Image 1 (cartoon, rainbow, N blue to C red):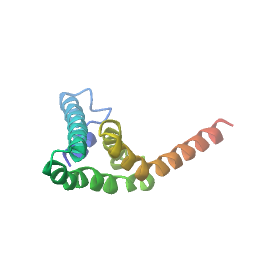
Image 2 (cartoon, rainbow, N blue to C red):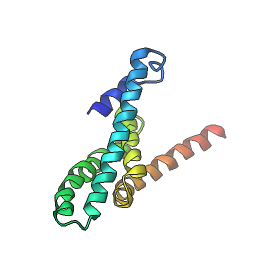
Image 3 (tube, helix red, strand yellow):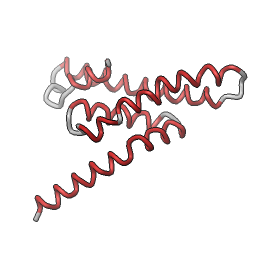
Amino acid sequence: SVHAEASSLATPSSSDTIEGSNQKKLADTCRTLVSMVAYHLEMATRSNKGNSSKRAEPLWTLFVLDAVQKQSPLLSTSPQSLRGRTAVAYLACLAASGGTRTLRVCLDACLVSLLEALTTSNQGNTEGGE
């Protein structure tokens, strides 16, 4: 995806360059777009305006539900990889801005993996500090 490619090229070491800065802006813009589309699709599924809700439901499923199901396994298989960090950023945007239904889907798919990652990270920090 454009977001994944831009995120991979916008590494901290490259952010000092014009290209790295542009890639970071592109990744940020992609996440903003994702948030807006998810929010508006969710609002359309709640609409009581006849066919609007029926037309929006498959789009929300494709854009939000399918994306969450595709990205969420990366949180448990490779959370520290570039793909894992990109998935975290993408899912965080959906969860933060998509609306309550989108937030629920993100939490259902990701919460266990995120808690496990935090537990593992915390155990590593505790063992290293002793």
